[in-house]
Length: 124
Length: 495
Image (cartoon, rainbow over all chains, first blue to last red; front, top):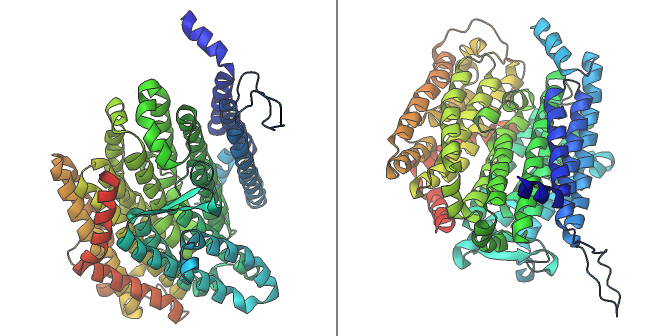
């Protein structure tokens, strides 16, 4: 038990990333408000980014800018570079989702998924 | 020419990407150039694919380093038998759907978004071709995201209520899927330190001994992520709305190609990358087998009760993607061959059926199945083509649907799982229950004046239908054509 706890404490950034992931996932599935769903989606994606970036972290490392004559420990730059792309992708997905929600609001006058279901079932 | 030919693996994607970004400019500047340029770039990619296929059959698999940066530093594309099989399917069927789209879209979309449609279409094609070729995990993720956004956008471009809603549902669920896949990539990168498939494949067996949990979690995340995107049975909830409300060319490409491409990604990851010892630790393939066989039966059950013809076709896609995954998960040579072959065969059948349904809607405006009685006498060509597709779905000999089902059944017997033969048989009967009444009623039903022929079918819409229908018959009678390529792909995957 104590062994597991100390392991968790040692890797607390992974733990926090997973907790954030679960919070985001839960928000996304349980809320009927579409805007909140998108927020949950963003929290989830941020958690994954945090997880990915923390893989590349080296204790005491610094940014990998190599200056001649100086020896340092550097962090792994690849995860950060990849996540930069990931953030761009996440932003565009969010923008697209929000613009779809604007359209939905124009058609239904609400952004609540349950109310939309009610409106649709009343019509058919 | 020879120096340019070296770059064909990149050009097949880049050509589509560039043309896709040129479309909005052309749309403002020279409107009449939009369609020729879009068709030209699709045709060019098709030619590139044929060239690559010929080169692979002569030289065997080869790699291409993006920008001259070799594997650990740069992104690598690998052209092997499986990826050229996917390339030919994607670009060939994609070209035919685009020809069809040039006429059909005019009545389905507002005029000011017409040019944008080609942007999205080419972007979607580029991402799918990229997924077939890529040999890099993170590049895979980027293409998956492009594919997800583009495929949602070609649904919502119609801007009516059903499309927007279906598109948002699809977008949210596929964001969960890509999130899962990215987390899976993180898990693999964590234990192997590589992103290139070849390097990961080498590093995984050793990593599995040290960190089995990471790899098992990664497998689960990949399976769930791909499952959502490929609409594997319990995760299919977005598919019927999305595929049925979209404009007909979008339905054709989404049902025919997009869900298949994720099956191809599944094959690439699970048959080539993950170590075999991992399958002894978690029964992933058994889970996929059960999911797909439940999907095969339930998808057909749902399809039977549908009133709307496009919704019926969409539920039928849920069942058909089950065949592909069933074949993959059987893990026998013939089963995998059947699964891979079904990717091609179903791409032909389903895109053709959606286009035939689109042609009926274009000419008469009828969507309800019960209103289609007697339509065979009014539109004999479209309904004959539809019947060929329906026969192929049921798996009647002389059509290509029979060939892939035959290999699936043999594959199931090879590994002593006769239960799955029964599943295939049952589903063929169920397919008959919902496809054949449409055919029978269309030709022999009494026309009650439910519909008028408001438009004649233009040539651009008729030609793709005829080509696809003849392709179904030809590959049904002479299956060797695609079978040889698929056979080599399977040997390459399972060796």
